[in-house]
Structures are given as structure tokens and as C-alpha cells.
Image 1 (cartoon, rainbow, N blue to C red):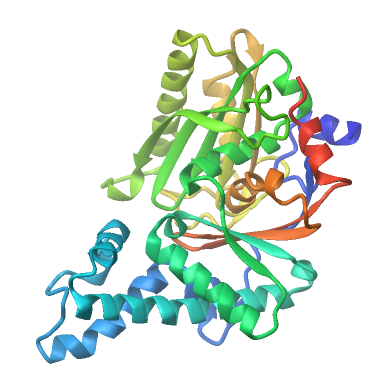
Image 2: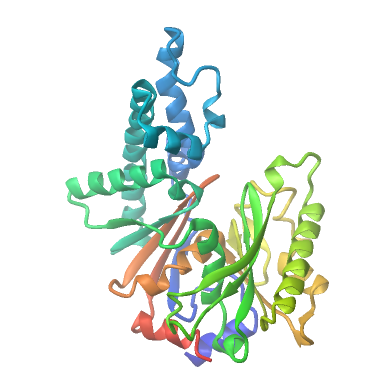
Length: 364
């Protein structure tokens, strides 16, 4: 365990070895004749499928959704429609889209399981914004059934925490053990293709040393997808502003923030904190050799309570997946798929007895 703590303390980003797990693979880019396989199971893919089911009805003048573009039909609106159960034709369209999407998702999962890095995967936690909707949960459950009917021994399970909170809570599992000594909270960041979110995460080790009771105290979100003339520098400035505000709020409420920031960010994360590839949905060029987010944040926020800051960054699917560490102790090899702007992916192997390792990472 000591080698892991030293490595983390030195600030190795995108690490393969973490306190509770080994990261076997992440940001795996599988392709077929149509392009990247993950695009077939993204949030956009569902809306495209929904649109295809509406087209023949639209030609007949009987589209139950009228002139509203499929991309503008929010998950909450679709969930409410299914819950009310009044418009049977609209329900039939949505259920048809769910079924077709589930078939695509099952196909994508099959391909991941055939990849060498994913061999022996016993369970996959499904996260991302699509998962938090009722239609997303239905699609995941249906894909799980399709796989089992085909004799594929893997369980697809919804991620335990709200996906937005899971993306922050997972940063606890990036942190070395010394971070928790004398501190009751950390700062965490989740960077996505639509939003940037920052929050104060409470490990709550007094309630559960394995971090099963970890929670998000406060968080702030900035939806950069709605901004015009947006660039990378403005995005970083917005993020720094959120962090400084959270630090002030935590101090006002007498929380003892650790001098640590955990970051989940799309793409292949290099050891020095640069991004090799996969950040194309972020505002501006985040893959530039002249840009390093952890360094920029350390310059803006060099310390917390006069203690030098430590910042660790990993892929966003890895970090969201790490929130599941306490709930994956009955399996050895497991993965995470996050359905959002794209399809994030990560595969893990529990270290030793994973439960003991998770406790080690949170000892006070």
C-alpha cells in the first residue's frame, strides 16, 4: 500500500494503480464500419433512434410529439409522459426507441467484453446523465436481459449514487490516505462535454470507513454548452471561481477542507496532467501541449488553509466508476460505462481484498 500512497502524493495523474483498484483500461476506442462503437450507445444515439421512429408518423401527420425536435425532448419530459400513461401512441414510440437502443447498448457491451482489457468482467456499473432517467434505467435493464438471454455472464447495474454526485464522490478514491488525516472534506471537479461541475465531498468515514456513506455537501454547475464565443480560458476562469466560492462556503460552515482537489476529465490523461486525446467536446483546445489543467488550478489556488495543494486528475469515466468501489467487493473484475455526450468506459480489478483497500484509503 505504501507505494500507492507515495505515487499519489507525488501527483501522478491518470494512474494505473490506485488505493483500492488497478485501472486496467479506460477511454478504449472501439470501431466498426460506421465509426466509433461508443457513438451507438450515447445519449444522442437514443434521440436519433427516437427521431427515426417518429419519421413515418410525421409523414402521416400523426406524430404524437408534434413539431418538437427529438433532441429537445428532455428525459424528464419523456419520463413524465411514461409515468402518466395517457398518450398511448407517444408511449409506444418511446418504448420502441428504448427497445432499439437497448439492443444497440447490448451490442456495444458485447464488443467491450471481447476486448482483451475487458476479459473476465463480472459486472458493469452504468452511469452518466442518461442513466438517471427512467427511460435510461429501462434501457439498461432491457440490455441486461438481452445479454443474459444470450448466455453472457455479466450484470449491468445502475450506478448507486446520482451520476452527477458519483462523478464527484469518485475523487475520494484518487486521494492518498494522508489526505484524510485531520480533514473532513475535499474538493472535486467533474468536467463534461456539456457541464463543468465542482463540489465539496464528505467522506463521512465516521459513519462508514469504506466510504459507502460518502456524499456531496455542496456543488456548483456551469453549463458551458449554452455559452456563445466560449473558449478554454473562460472555462478555466469559471472553474476557478466555483472552487474559490466553495472554499469560502466550506470555511464559513466550519468544514476542514483537505488541501486536495480531485478531477475527472474526458480523454486520455497523461502522468503530467496533460490530455493526449479525447477532449474534443470541451470548449477550446484542451489537448494543447501548452495547456495543463492541474498546473493552472495549482497556480490559481496554491493552498488551502496555508497547506500546499495536491491535485490529481483522471479520466471522467474512471472517476465516476470509482464511486462504485465500496459496492463491488463481491467481484474481482468490473467496469463502468457512462452514457452522456459520448460513451465513457473504464475497467477495474480490485486490489487484494478491495474492501480493505477502500478502508485504507479513508483511514483517519
